[in-house]
Length: 359
Image (cartoon, helix red, strand yellow):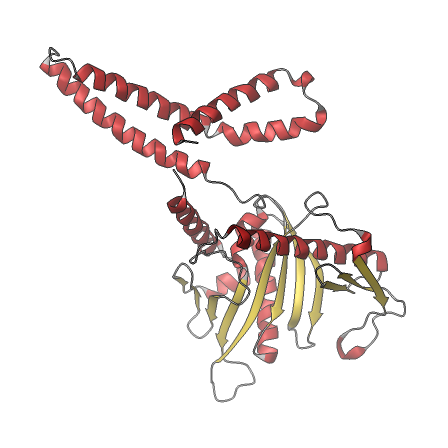
């Protein structure tokens, strides 16, 4: 389908949806939200498309006028200038349309589950993992998102071996999806008497929160084990078998949940995480099958990719994908000021997709 044909189709579809919404009573309740959303999605595209069409028509009329050998010289000069203006309008509007017509990630509107694990670096890595977890909690607060802690495995030294949370709000996954990867920290541990800088790391995984409509998990594909929850040092947290381990047999995905005293609540949280992990694995598989992943894709989600370094001695945070460095480590880590990084990553991804666009 050509660019022009695509615009015609969008304008016609918008008019069709307008007609349907004028007669709301005739729309089945189950379809109304779907139609309203599609109408809303097209609402900001159609005016640009219509202006593009007007500029094209004006350009055609002016070109025809300038073919008249008897055209008054003064009118000819005006028409030539207007034709140049039209050409510029067409270029500008075409660029705007290419941006708004880029295919969106179908998961951008989803909520997210974030999982953080301490990597290399022992206690320092665990402390860093805890700091990252709090950083995303602050970022969620700044965006007025709900941040629900799902599980935390502490080291006993205020560090986290691993932690996960559910983040709910507007456009959560769209903003956080580029955070997946290895985050590295450089600082002098309190126990380091010689002042030597240590490097440690933590891994962040951001998964789109999957609903039952997104992926079906059959009961027969699940192996559920219950056991007694335990805390640091193996001390029993309670005396009932409230902890839950769920294994998804087709993929081998395992989720253990023991933070709640209720077995029912632990099972619900474990299923939430399991569904997100299985859905994410399917997303990655499909992406690879399409062979459309760019070599320089900023949001590859590769868990082994070092994406950002937090240098405490220099109060510096550097994102290696977009080459942005901020000398405001305190604000980033303690207050969740990630906007500059996230906006740059979204813009970079958008630009790369635009370069690959067929239009």
